[in-house]
Picture 1 (cartoon, helix red, strand yellow):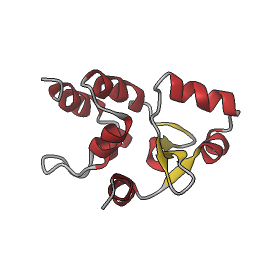
Picture 2: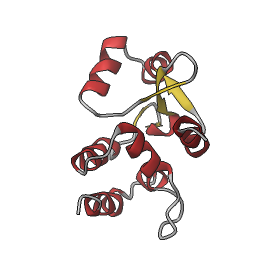
Picture 3: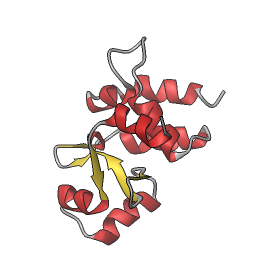
Length: 120
């Protein structure tokens, strides 16, 4: 199984850049700013290698509040964008669900602590 297939199995629903623009109600340059400033991360998927982000990164028409800080912590730990998505969407036996589910439920402190531990 390729890395994209593994991520697809973990993530499920993806948004392309145009989908993300529509979901957030912003212009293309704003989506590029979000990606450049690492407020969200994307991977290239599909035959056309379109940049895509997990749909779960959005909640109520906005980026999940605690996602950006968690991305920063994972980036500081040396994770690539694909590795971050993999970590966020992989079930953890010590959590009910995945780190992304915990972030969506507002449990950022617990998830940031786990992400910080990855750097050691």
